[in-house]
Image (cartoon, rainbow, N blue to C red):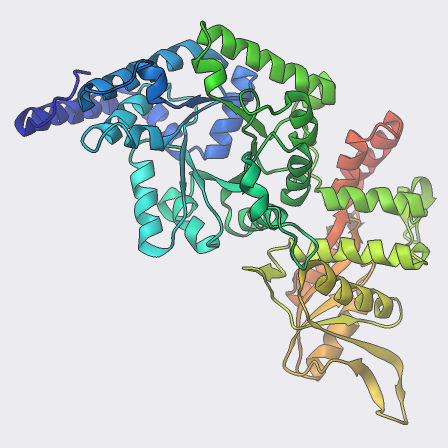
Length: 553
């Protein structure tokens, strides 16, 4: 493309008319399948496809520092010459590093600083030279609400970006314009725990929920992704491996992390990989700018970094575990719950004959949570499942008013879960339970605790076997004018009630009562846990896999 001239409006107009016609021509000459596929593919799908094709987690930064463009200073250099130098700088980087790049990350600030007339046009020129199969993450760090946020989204995506970086401190409504509606196939990485030392001033503060601010951001990103179907990632500095690990645990295994700081800022690649990779050995992008652009051979430097990242992955995961698998993802709180139940003896693997006559490869007995420590950890797991469920929480607020524990097992469960919701998340809801027999003295009646009349009630239990107790609770709540907002249980066996009945006990409750049921873990998570655990033989995983294939829903 010919360089754009300053202060020549007629020439500027002609150039951009030619540019527009060229773009139209290119679109027409591309195959229809290619155009449609590129438009419809989500950012995450595009990123994962590129990661797999390039076997790379390297994100190449395109940051045309003027000190690199003009080592002797840019005094007297025209805006046009600055822009052309920046374009050539980035074009050379793209050509040299594209084979090794999972993603390109141009920083908008450096282009804006080139000048008011041609800076953004230069950014567009650069983005147009990036191969279409490689995702573009535009580093803009926007953060506003309403029409302003929508305008920022339009401006970013009109340049050709697939995703952007955002400041999430103004909440979901500042993020939504970038990842919903016409931009639902786009992605956004939220600033979570950045690599600068001053990030601890705010992002490292402790909240009443016993989380840091950055952990709350990570938790919210996972919830927003689930609730709105948004493609959200997190920016967490590789300079703080502990924060990487905590953000991964809070955000879950599906979130992509962008971990700047490797190289010039001193971040350790092996430590970042160990802390940030998900259970499948992916979900982590390592962005590098100066370490590549200032190398004598940027292409060789990019290849070396890509290989080092792969080596770091292999130190954490065997080659087999880095491959794709079809197990359901397991979140950190679910993994901790399974490990804890195994240590308590409440969960066992082996051969167990159930009441139904089936021989199950595992057995769960909630009655073995029989100490203060056990109840504390159990309640923490329940509260995590509740808080992260879009069925029970929306915009940080519970979709229920009271937690109800049906007699007898549910009484202690309901009490500790209500306490954990306040202790862990600052959420204060009522608690109530019932008696098996009506009391004929004192306050009388069968219900004790918070008034549930006209309230939305969350029922807490350990498991659903036939669903009888849940149905009885639902009927009782209806009689007093309460609404069953949902049910939360520890374990969903997720298996057919019989070979002739294709639904599980949980599915039957959801269908018959029209209420959501949330579990801490289910059979698919047990299978995922065994797949990633070195403590169990292959035959244990195989027995659970076979059981799920035969009886699972």
